[in-house]
Image (cartoon, rainbow, N blue to C red):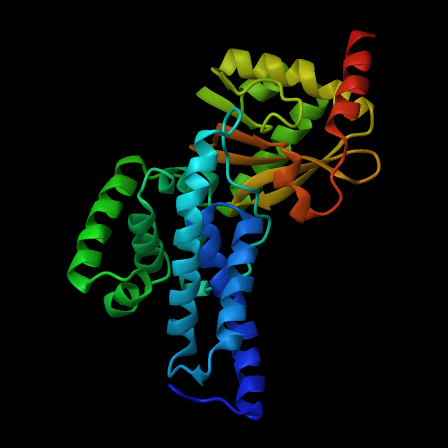
Length: 314
């Protein structure tokens, strides 16, 4: 590392901004929270800015720093998640700022809700090693420096993490255009309350998983089975559209999904869909307002619920 002058500080800031998308993407996959990932990136900058010398490899240095910060946050977050009200789902991510055309499919799958829930089963160190190695392709010397373990230990952590991930690794339809078309048909059937149309698009063992965090109304925490889910959606959603709730198809966590907004354009609910073999396998629904704040103004779900309930009864 070398001493830092005024010009070097300017260059350092530019380097950090160039690497910010990567740092956020690492932190988000480790934490499953947009807000916590942004805080981890900011803490990384503050440490970098305060450092008296410039590293030979800013990418390796900053990636290691954001990983260590995220591991510390993850350890404390696990305690909070044990006390979480209802089902816990990661904060929805509409756009991953880091892109690599050569690894686009892997990056999209690694940020999916299903993959992030699998990562929750790993220890913080296993999770960090897996993300750095299998998702972002870091070398083991860099990983060892980031997590404070020997290369041999990191290799063992990688093997264990990969085994756990492979046992439950989610599968998705590969053709993005087909998934988007299915999502559009699904939202049309939802809007019309078309039970048969919904059934044609749902897997037999489909699940709806809701995360309101005890802070927003939700239909149920988990609803399973094609008949239950189709009836639930057909009965519940047409009244929502009659009170001017809108559903916009959107990529969510690298997979097809939808953003639901109230009549004033405020976010109410985010859905991400797991699609396989031309059928919706899982609907992940997040309406905890704390997990939507990074997307812009958040609507009053309770007010919408009361209006929905009145409309449904008429």
